[in-house]
Image (tube, rainbow, N blue to C red; front, side):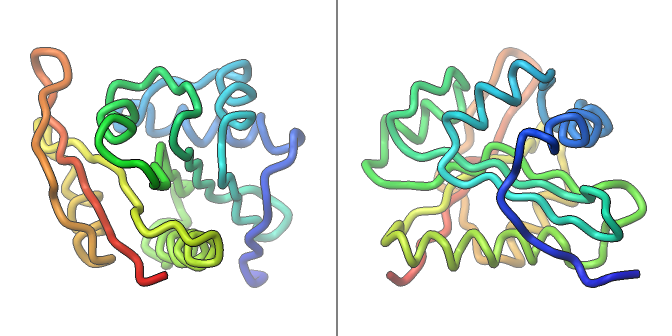
Length: 165
């Protein structure tokens, strides 16, 4: 196996990103080719990890006032002036538990520090619980800032990590 390579997303990656997202759609939300194009255009940070010539992970992040229609994004946009909102991170099955998610987050943190962005925000499901995401974010220093209901059956933990810039 070759060393993972992080790089900005290009249009040729969209099909692989769509397949990756679809593989975990029960934990994220649907994202077809048109939606990927929209979110990519809004994104402040959108990277993939390529290993052995295939996209094996991606991270999509949006900044303030970008017009994103996600309720969770809007919650942060109403409360923070400056932030990077992690919309989704997906690592391909068979490549999980190899540190690729952590590698992407560390790259994001370095980028954010360089951009003088202190607040890295995201959410994960607590009802139903996404235990892997809870452990992952806790290990990376994220802290809960609120619990919010999304619809009638889903509760999310709003998370914040403050960086030293």
